[in-house]
Structures are given as C-alpha cells and as structure tokens.
Length: 86
Picture 1 (cartoon, rainbow, N blue to C red):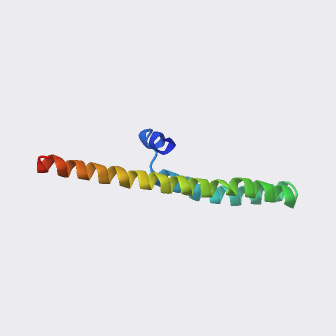
Picture 2 (picture 1 turned 180 degrees about the vertical axis):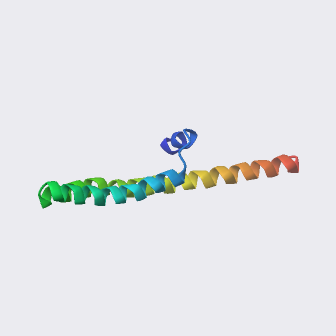
C-alpha cells in the first residue's frame, strides 16, 4: 500500500537508490564534521544515525522496483489479451 502510494506520487526505484547512496555520503560527512567539532563518541552517534537510513532506502528501492516490474508485466499481459480478443 505504501509502495503503491509512493509510486503513484512519482517516486521511482532510482530515486530511492539515489537517496540511499546520498545517505551513505551524508553519514561520512556528518561523522567528519562532528568529529572535528565535538568528541569522537558524539561523532560516531551521528554517523551511525544517518548511516541507518541507507538500508531503509535500499529496501524501499527494491520494493519499488518489484512493484514497477509487476506493473509492467500486468500492462504487457493486458495488451496481449486485448490483441488476442480475449
């Protein structure tokens, strides 16, 4: 249901993969920035917090990719049935 709503809103699997990749980079940047400004423990917490977003975005990307493939498969079979006169 959530995947369908995201798909209907225009979110594609590529967008989720891009967000996952960006969150990995953001995790590194936040760790480096926090490490320079604060202590190591706080920097580690920031890096881990942001780093936990990546698996969520990758999973969402996989769910959207499966939904997109299913939608294409359904559309293709619908076209075939239409041309077959069924």
